[in-house]
Image (tube, rainbow, N blue to C red; front, side, top):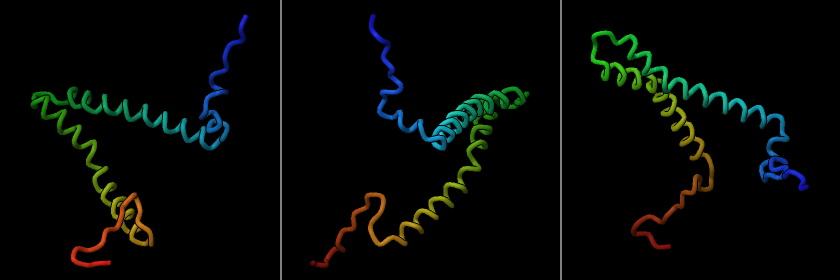
Length: 106
């Protein structure tokens, strides 16, 4: 009789699960993604339930659009912060390569 393979302990990423903080982080990410999935289903469903005599497709589109509106200013602020932080570094960041200006020889 052969011994069952302990695939989890032999997995290359098993060491990540030994860190308590990372285990908690991944659990939180997993639970958050479940909540995001529930919201993707429940927001249009609620729009259909309360639409009444209004065009149901318009109600679902408006509810879906409104669900993403709070993310727009947050993403703009985060983008501005990342650009400001990148300009403080002396080396090119994010894989950007500086090229010489046209007309200048080095």
